[in-house]
Length: 495
Image 1 (cartoon, one colour):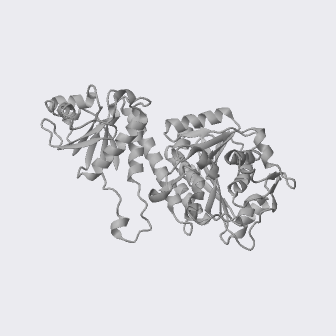
Image 2: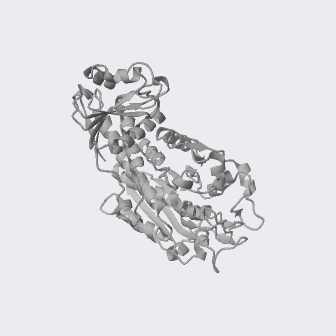
Image 3: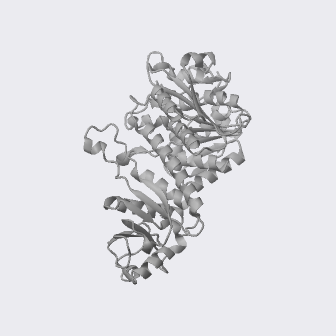
């Protein structure tokens, strides 16, 4: 899909199709009212006669409406005017674009963005249109062998986003931001959906280099296991001890501001496959553990978006990448390892491995003297139990940072929910043999995981996003969601 700004009333558009909004009751929206006058009341009659109800997401494709210059009109319902907000607009936009793809229309002009939907402005409505298209059009067919299945990508179309008043600059900005976010989410989804025999730590290195190639603002460096040993990353290396696949530590830097400007450091959990190690996971749904690198995919994707948007700030992406496998040399429950920070860790469960690679990455991240540090990880099943697939879990040692991330999630429709983080939870992590244990029992598992990580950030403003419930969908619609890319890009945009 290509996007452009379109001006002028609906009745004068010569596109293959125009998309017009309607409510379930009350006056017609301005754009639809103007088209209805040209059509001598034909559109209003459909609503009056009950042929189109206007409920959220309802669509009706009309061929050759007399008085209009385009051969098709697509009516799209926004529901009750007083209840119409961003979620309704997203649903209506998705329905509209689905209906367009079922038609033969190539050039389409949408007037959905001209409605003053609650919680939006012209920028946000244009961005929503582009983001929804990217999400709806996404297909992962790279590993299909039939040409008919490999080529199931939607036909190229041109979507004109209509403007009203002096909104042209804001609509253009919304389109540009939506394009960057949509492309970044597609990258994160591709990385998540690839199987672990392809998406290895080395493969993530290659994709990070692809993102940086040709962009003077991006640079990549990679630490191998020998370098990690010299840095004394004993916690990270304990996770990769049982596998033949070499671990990698990716440092992806974006420089959009002066070198002395403190960066935002993003740390993404990159377990490219998680068997649980010696604490072996049960077999059902273990195939979904290829998604355990979703935090890593998010970080690489967000750095791509930052470069595409030329954001005027510095961002560092850290990706500790490895497998967690059983084997003769694998770490055992009861083993004690020393982290890069010097703290010793008693490993009571080798399936609590994400925090073991993240703690060394967080220690490494402090060398950049960040303005803020955020880790993103599919960390705990407890978070799925607590919040389901609707919201990512958020814990932080900084109120302003937590507030900024929560606000960004709400604005981007990629929400998080803050859980407490207090000293009382550290009590559960006490070990009689080491400085800290890597698990704290069944109670408050999501919070104790964050409490463990908080020991490795010093005084840096830090937040932890647990995306175990939001990073992928299970079941028949199994696949990566690309979350929380939109949340993090929104956060960076607001900085």
